Length: 445
Image (tube, rainbow, N blue to C red; front, side, top):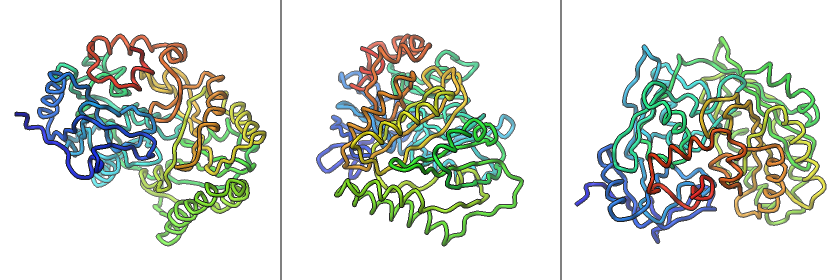
């Protein structure tokens, strides 16, 4: 009898249904497994194959697509956590796949180390975040997956495969953002560096000024991003750059007021009002866009890169060529202004340099990311459909974990190395043990 543990309690809903963070995806797996070792995970994979069941792994469910949904065996890696090894000579850390980014960041800080770049939340597991292409913003530093130096995963035959630039390099090129299609990731080795300080400068700026000066703002800052509030001509900008110090964090009271009370509590209440009375949304947007004042602070990287996100939403995000960002945003603003849409969430804009990962949204090209959101429970289809039409006209590549309607035929056109990935999948998972409906659509049958 299998020794693999079965998840109980809150891991599955009361009726055995799994749901994602956004509440827009659910699944009823035949069973869940919570392996506590690589050997137990491999056993679970072999057992599922013998029973003719598909296998998917899921982290914290922060993807808005059904990328982790299955009616077969759902692998929950929350017992596969912690740092395996820190190599100070190579400046790498090897971490178990189920480790939340938050726990990794805290552990690295205690060791005087840090990742080079991060996304804007840190609730996800390291394997979930990298497998879907989670990223922050950076002029020179790329996504979380681009910082991977080695991977370990269990493949469809239950064997353990390791890869890096030197070992199985063709697997390494694809598996850093593997979509769960090549195997179940069990451990990741990241490049790290001595912990440093970042100075964040946040300030409001008119929409047209940001677009007019975008190239300059991008070139002059290591990490630049901004939020545009639909129905207004206002944005909030954020510039993060390395600093010699001294450390000057946001004060506890000020941080609570701005990051918790205003950005989460008041914003949540405003969205409730907007959902109940859509006609109020433009006025709420004008107030929201002016609620936060300029501020500057200096702190350790994860405290600057990441923010609490307690207001639940659904999201679509596309990567477009960086040189097309101003034109794309003007088209998006014109579309919203001319429509009857009422959009209560700001549009987030970030960048990334080109990387060499096969299905990275920044693969082979400098990219800008444009993310549109809607408050959970608010109809989003009309807004997302209109936005997607604009993004795809610029050869946009959707984030693998965020809503989109693209398929394998589209991806074969916008990813020059798409065929490399599908050929590797044919080799590693010929019987499609890791298939689900989402992968069938985006990768083909």
